[in-house]
Image 1 (spheres, helix red, strand yellow):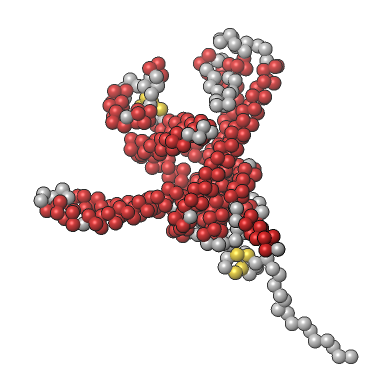
Image 2 (image 1 turned 90 degrees about the horizontal axis):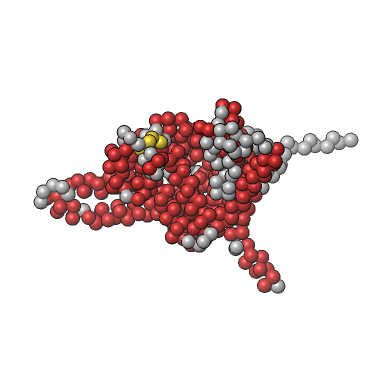
Length: 439
């Protein structure tokens, strides 16, 4: 009898299979709509800002190498590259350059390195992504500040809404609407917006004192003595920065779900994520690795579905079009819409060889294909926030022993609440029954 009672308890300790609910949650239409809308706003902002075209590139006839590619190969050669090709080279936008580079690194990490169990390759592709961001900030800082501020504001609202939907769905199997989710994230906009800025601000504040100590070290004779005397506090400050930096990198994925699950502010969300990471780092890493591998499999499936959708549609169109393009001498559909591939869903028609009607048709087809690709990217965004919301609930259950269905619910008028959690039990009537009339 004792073994029979213990077996359910042992099985309940294995919470990691809950991560496999992510695909069903991520594919939910309301989440895809929110993610697609956020992606469209960010891309539109980047497209408009790219009219400035500040990235210097080698002419396409000579390879089309951009500043970013030079920076990744040898950062010291970027300035000479800019000076040499500033007048005779081509100009491109920062957003389009980052988008192409990020797409290449994403597929390199997910479809090539991860499936080949090449963990150093995965780490390199991820580090290259951060290096690309550092290039943008270093050489296009005004553009980067404006664009990243817009991106962070959109992510705060959309990401908060996605986490809130995932939290309610995972905790109570509820499916709130788009309006309800976005209202929740809008009311806590400052908390979501400040999450990535708060750790950075703390690190900069502490690092400023180490910087001042370095300035003092420039004073002849006295400076090095003062610096050596205060080296111990400098090491303590450096250790504190290391702890904050490690906790931010490892626990950043839990910060948005903390606000969505517990209604926390940014400081509470950061402290919770730090606590969970440092209390059970191996469990956190285990959950994250399961989510990454499972996410890669799901992404491959959804990408193949998108490719099949485009290929089948084009194949049936091809059956009905037999007229050739007058300029290129190839089939009209091939000129308007090049055949997609699994790794190249978009295709790029040569608009210079098309007449005006074919160019317009190619542009419209291109927009429809972009919508399909946008939905694919929206799935990735939805999966990311859904998976991390589930991981947060599992970590909170293990560290704080909090029930998985315990979730913050705003007070509703006319409904009594206790600890900000709605109580759905009927209240006892306070109306006293009338005494029976004696006959």
